[in-house]
Image 1 (cartoon, one colour):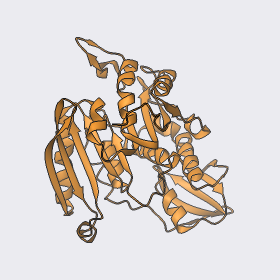
Image 2 (cartoon, helix red, strand yellow):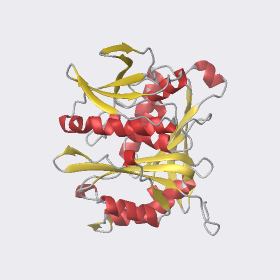
Image 3 (cartoon, helix red, strand yellow):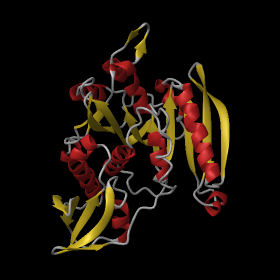
Image 4 (cartoon, helix red, strand yellow):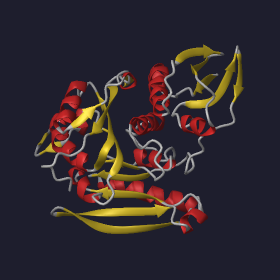
Length: 345
C-alpha cells in the first residue's frame, strides 16, 4: 500500500526551501521507530509537496504515531493518481494554540521544534513508553520547547538564567490553563541546588477533569538559574529527552566575566551536567548556528562528555538556512550508561 503525506507550506520562504528534505529526515526517523524500512519519495502535485512511501497496511496506532509529524497537512492512501485521505490525526494532549500564541523575538519556529522532539523521541528507546516522557530544555527562554512537549502529552522541565523570560512563560501557561478551564495546581517554591537556591514554578495538570481526579497528570517545571544546576533540579525524575536550541549569535554568547565566552567553552562546562540530567539511553538534540558554532565542535564536546552522536542518515541532512546570518543544523546524541566511577547525582 502506498501512503502519502501532504506537507504544510511554511511561512518562512528560506525554511520552506529546505522543508521537503527536513520533513523526509523526520519521517525516516519515525518510520524507523516503527521498524518500517521504507523508501521515501518526494513528489509534487497541484503545487503541493508530498512525501510517499510503500508498506504493508499500517495499524491505527502506527498511523496515529506518524500523524505527529511536524509538517503534515493530511495523510492519504495513493491509488494511481488518486488520493484517498485517511481519517486520522494527532489531536494532541493540549490544544495546538499552546506553543503558538506567545510571540517574541528570537522564538524558534514551532514546526522545527516539533521536528526535533519527534526525531529525538523516535531515536530513543522511549518512543512507545506507557508512561509520560519528560523533556528537558536547559536553555528554555520563554518555553517554546516545553510547550510543544506538553502539547504532545509529555511532561517538561525548563531552566534559564533569564528571570523575566521564565516568569513570562509561567504566567502565560497559568493563563492558558485558566482560559481552557483545565484542572491544575501550581506550586511555587525554592529548590536548593548545590550552594544555590533557585525559584521554581511547578504546574500539575491534566487534559480532562476525570484524568486529573484519577491522578493521570502531566507536569511543567520552570526554574530560574544556571543551566549547570539541572541535575540537582530533576534528580528524582531525570529526563528521557533533552531538546535545546543553542544561542545563535555573538550577542547571545555566554558571559564569562567582562568579555563574552566561547560557545565551545559553554558546552564543555554544561554538557556533563546535562548528561547527569538524562536517563541512560536518552537522546539529546541540539540545534545551533553553524556560522558561530561549527558542527565538529558540537560533536567533539558531546563526545568529551561521553555522549555518542547518532550518525544515521536521517540525522546528517538537517543543515538549512534560516536567515542570512543563521545556517542551522542539529546534532542528536545518545546518553551512554554511566561508568562505575561516575556519580550520577
